[in-house]
Structure formats: structure tokens, C-alpha cells
Image (cartoon, rainbow, N blue to C red):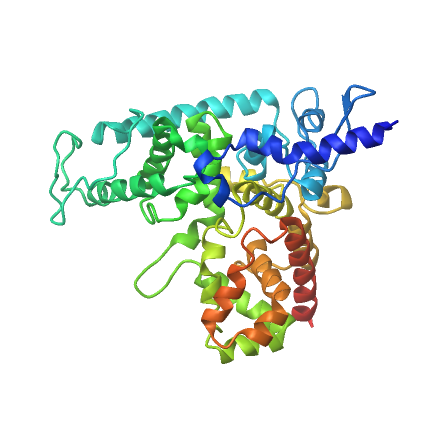
Length: 432
């Protein structure tokens, strides 16, 4: 006879991959080429009591139980669960909105609903402005061919209803077909993007974002950041605001010029971290002409999208965002100039509202601008591959090949925990 624990364990282990496939189904012709996700939702069901048990993953039941009667969220409790086992696919979208700073955990449900409606109205206004210039926006379709030629002249007047004499308009029009080409290439293995309407939703959000960002606009790779949000959040306006908050963290990564690239500052920080915690490895990389750490460019640019399966990427991101969480994130984004700030980390209760990574920074007073968890995560990957790099790498190409072997073979939680250890070691040595 199998006891409750046996039945629960069987269900929990066998249902993980099947459950993920139901949330992020793969096109049949692509299944052989897509690596199986390592992440398995750890929410088990007991047949004898007919109830869900704890597990490590933040489940829908635990998520709902974390809110008070009027809607205040116990963010400390949520962060503990996320950092242990991620978020169940059924609630990822709404949890991410809090992790990325769309909403204040200390707000009520009524306050959040008012903010959501106000934001939706704002997005609809911006989208209508874009649609007046390019009517295909919001039509359920998108474009992949240029709207203007090299001289800035409109190619097909039926697609553009505005003059190109305005520099901002011209630059935006020049981006739209590139966004479309990238949309076609985005997560092509997923059934979700077999639908042109879903592709158009991604194109619309990126196009509106590019119109509003006068400085950087759109850069290839933003599609990889936006795509999971499009899949997880149904309402397009809510997708936009969640993507906007994600870009607040990552926007500088995409700032490129003829002489510099956005992640250069993070690469410099990575170099300093490895030089501090593993000088032997750093000197070896310098000898290989890899001291600028350009081989880590892609990892930092799109947050490991190429190194992990789709499901594992989502798991990695929510682990990182949970560990980096700062309870002041909402007010800092919503009103950067406000003198009213969130809770000050004056005691242990408040410190629990910070993620593990950010909590360590707060305790030590470390405020280095470009030392995001992603940088320590790359450092952890280098440390995991330390022996192979030292023994086998005879050039930068060898380093790239060795790091390429981590694709679908890296455990997200293990890598994050290793990153925390490197952070602790780095801060200790840097202080000395």
C-alpha cells in the first residue's frame, strides 16, 4: 500500500514537465530540437486529503493567502517562497508585476485597480497616436518590410499617414520593419506564436515603446525580454507597463554607439569581480585577450535567454528579481523625485522585505551601480567552468565554446546560489 507521501511525490514529479508543456506548448515539429526544462513546479497534491500540499514553488493558493482582506501583500512571505522554488506558471504574470515594481505591495486592491485603469487609458492614448501614423498598429497584423527608403521617403503611402520631415517620426518609422523581422524570429518553437494576432501583440507593444523612448528606441534583443511578458499577461496595456518596468532595469544594456555598447560597464564590473575573487582565472583570460569579457555580452544583454530553455529562463528571471527585490522599487519608478520613500531597512522585519541579494547590499552599504545580480551570475558560470577554462582554453574562441556548453545544462537555482556566494566573497574582499 502506498502512503500519502508516496502518492503525493509521484504526482509532483511526474506532472512537472507535463504541466509546463500545457502552459508553454511546443510546436510538434520543434520538439526534438527544444531542450527539456530543468524547472519543475513543486506543488504536490495529496489524494487521501484531496488537497494541495506545500511544495517549494509559490502556488496560487499560497499567493492568494499572502494578501490581507483589503489587498495588502506580505511581500516578505512571497519572496521567501520565490527564492526557494520559483512561481507556478498559472500566476507568473501577476507575480511578476509586483517583482518588477508595477505595483506597491503596501497598496490596497482598490488602489491597484484604479492605477491599472489609469495606465490602460494612458497606453490606449499612446497606441492611438501611433495608429494614426501607421494604421496597421492595432489591426492584428504587423509589417516586416521597410516603410521608408534610404532617403527618408515613404515607400507605400497606404501604410503611413504622416510626413517624414520630423526626425523623431522618421527614426521611428525606420525601426518598425526591424521590429517585425525580430518578432517573426522570436520564440518560434512555441505554439503561442503560430498566431499572427499574438505576434502582432508583441509588435504593437514594442512599437509603442520605441515611439515613447526618444533616446534608445528599439534595439534587437528587446523582443526576447518582452516575449515572455506577452505570453504571461493577457491585457496588452498591462504587458506594456510590465515591459516598461523590466526595461527600467535593463535599458542601459541596449544603449549602443559607434564607440561603446550598453553592457560595457557591466562587463567592466564582471572583470573586477573575477579579478578580486579568482585572480588566477582573470589573469588567464587576460592572457587569452579576453580581459574585456566580451564573451559574456549576450548573457548580460538578454538575461540568459540563449543559455536556458524558455521555462527555465522564466524561472531564472523570477529568482533573480526576487533576490534583487527592493521594497522601494515602486515609488522609485512611479515618482523618482518624490521625497516620500518606502520602508527604511532599520530592522530585521523591514530587511525581510528585501531579496537576498539586495539585502546583502543594504547591510554592507554597497551601492556600485553596475553590480546587478546578472553580473555575479555570469561570474558564477565562469567559476563553474573554471577548471575547463584554465586547462583547455587556448584562445577566446575556446572560452566561448566552453561557455556555450552550459546551454540547457545549467541549474538556475544552483547558479543563483553560487552568485550569492561570489557576491559575499567579493564584498568581503572589496571591503578589505
